[in-house]
Image (cartoon, rainbow, N blue to C red; front, side):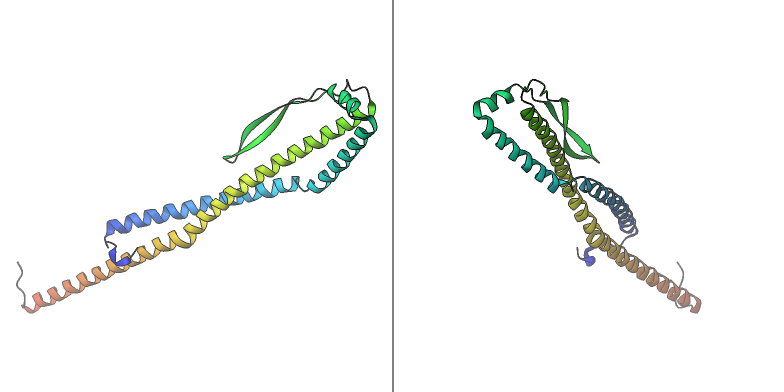
Length: 206
């Protein structure tokens, strides 16, 4: 916005000062939220450091399951597995500082007690534990992505306020203040001239 197009009045100056106060307060609030979100990301990031170890554990368990499958044969292996009862889970929405994320809730755990083969039962229990950990890890990773995405937005708005909006308002306030000061000086100078003329008798009072 061109400064020359701004109406240099006390009313405009007051409104700009109010807008500047709101912008500065908004920037402070966003900075506090940014710190809050950064702490949340760092806190959750610590929980996903086990990704490599978990992937290795799953790879090892899949290898054992395939080996057992080849040893028992498809029919017998599937027969043992069909005796198990799977878990009941529920996917829920949760709020992380107002940011929508997902949460997985286990309503009922699996039951492997009907699997008569101890090796198959052991593999099934180990796989369930590893897959549960993998799901929990995926939920954490998705939460981090959601928070990080909102953090980027907060950063953009904060930077816009800091580098564009607030400096522009400050410049407009400075411009209007200078214009009003010049007008006041001009009016004061005119009054002094009028007073001197009156004192010299060069101007009759009305």
